Image (cartoon, rainbow, N blue to C red; front, side, top):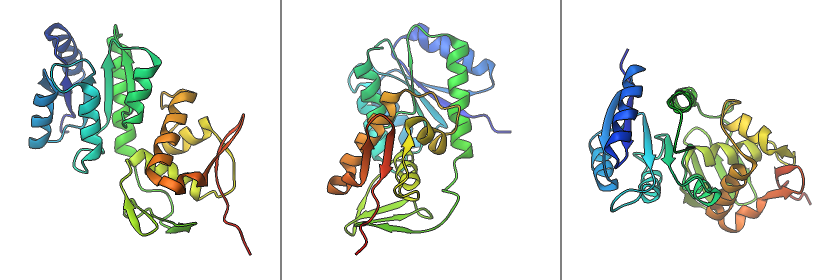
Length: 233
């Protein structure tokens, strides 16, 4: 079986070596980058199965690398686990807003980190299009699950895989209210590490990309979210 490829982007050599040692012990193949620019150059040549990404890097920082990766269709599906000493909520939120899959604060337990890596890779390998291939056309949105394509008033909108699945899930259950944890279970699976705040961030990012159509995703105070039903008349 081919080894899973992990790109470790970290400017501190001791941490690079610690990560390499623990990852290789679990039979992962490891590539190393010591700056954001070096990571982006490596990503042009080959696609790892997952990226471990420090935030505080010389030159292009980790959040910018994450933003560039998620904006490029060639790398947007690669899971990113942010690894940083910046453990404040604002930094966690910033990473999630940009499309990171998980966030681990330093100092970290190698066992916990390896469990997060394994979970992220398992989610990626089990990702499939929504269980139904039904094309949804609601309000001025067209949501095509066979091509992972969303049109707003005829104009295509670029969404990450998570954003697409979140939108499709809510739109395919029009009018039904879901808690944050129900949404996470449906989109990611029950083993996904999540906080209430991270779901709110993902919803906020999706609304922003949808423009005025983002209002179709309604907040139900104290419960969660629902997709607005179309008015009949």
